[in-house]
Length: 309
Image (cartoon, rainbow, N blue to C red):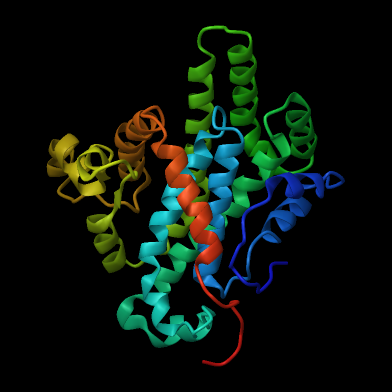
C-alpha cells in the first residue's frame, strides 16, 4: 500500500477512488484502498499535504454534508507546523528515516512529534473511508450498514452516518431541523475521533511535550484580511483560562490539551462555533481548501524516495 511518487500536478481524484472501489465489501479493504491514495509513511510532509488535500476534496464534494472533513482539512494543515522537527532528518527529496529520527533527536522530543504524525495518519485511516462509502446517498449508507454487521470499526460510525442521512433527506424535503441534524452528526464524528482515535495517541505523549503543546495549541481559518482572520482564531489556553479558570483553580492544575475533557470543551465551545461562522461567511472556506489542494501538488519538486542525500 502507498507509494513514493512525484507531487507535482497531483490532485485528489475522489470520483476515480470511489468508482475503482465498487467491489470492495470490507472495512479493511476500504482502508487499504484509501491508504493507496497516499505516499508512503516516510514521505512525512508529502503524506500530510495529501491527507489535507483529500479532506478538502471530500468536503468540496458534499459541502452541505461533510462538515467534519472541512474541519479535518484545517486541523491537518496545522499539524504540518508541529511536524517541522522532522525536516531536520529529511533528505532532499523529503524522505524521513523515521526510526533514526526518533532515536537520535530526542532533545527535540522527536518521539512526541512522531506521535502527532501517527495521530494524523490514524484519524485519516479511521474515518475517511466511511465518507467515501456513504458518499451522500441512501445506497451508500446501506453498504456501510452491511459492513457494520461484520466489523466494529464500521459499527461505531453508524450512528453519526444514519443521522447524517436523516438530515440530508430532511433538507431535501425542506423540513425544519435537517441542517441541525447534519451538524450534530458531524459533531458526533468529531467526538468519536477525539475519544477513540486521538486520546489513545495523546496518552502516549510525554508530560513536558504535552505542556508545551497545550500552550502552543491554536486554530485559525484563513479569511480576507488579518482582522477577519483574527475573528476566526482561537487558542486552547486562551479559551480554557477565560472560560473555566475557577474550575482549574479549584483543581490546582493547568488545562492540558491531552486531557479529553479539556480539549473537548475547547473544540465544542470555541472551534465548532467559529467553524460554523467561517463556513457561512462567504467564499473563504472554498478558497482555503482549494489552496490546500494546490499545495499538495507542488509541495516538492522531486519525488519522495529512499535515495541518499
